[in-house]
Amino acid sequence: MNSDIRAILFDSEEIAELVRGLGKRISADYAGKNLLLVSILKGSVVFMADLMRNIDIPCRIDFMAVSSYGSGSKSTGVVKIVKDLDINLEGYDVVIIEDILDSGKTLGYILELLQSRKPNSIKICTLFDKPCRRQVALQADYAGAEVPDEFVVGYGLDYDEKYRNLPYLGVLKPEIYASDSSETA
Ligand code: IMP
Ligand code: MG
Picture (cartoon, rainbow, N blue to C red):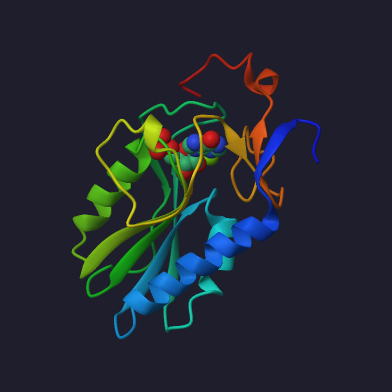
């Protein structure tokens, strides 16, 4: 285990099981529809890569990059589109793929933006959910597992762009981000 990690919440096998379950549900719900998976970079890239291989119906993928945290560990509430989608959403049944739903500010903004582009339908799939942290009334249509109110990294999730490559979801030792007082980075 990485020495900056205090505990492992979900190991790679447990995550694979969650992803398999979500893939199965989406495959069943979207059979015969015009499925487009929209991955929110960078955090959801690992989840997206595994989830799409657990979906056994035709689908397309696209990517959008937003920044809301900078290098810090708390949401700024400011969402900036860094890379927009390539595909025009009209006629698609969109599922937004997120790594973790925390305050809901990021997804609230993205949902409103994508809804204005008139897709057939739009739903949210998050691998991890921290419902106790919610500041925006928002619920995932598909959620892998709830996590406690702690800063977690790995399986795509970062702190200061690090730890995304860990194959498990772990709790970061608080001393690693204790000196981080900036919420505007
Ligand atoms: P929200 O806007 O507060 O819901 O935050 C959404 C984004 O913040 C996620 O897509 C993650 O990139 C990041 N985030 C939220 N909580 C954590 C965490 O515990 N670890 C790493 N990133 C997080
Ligand atoms: Mg992040």
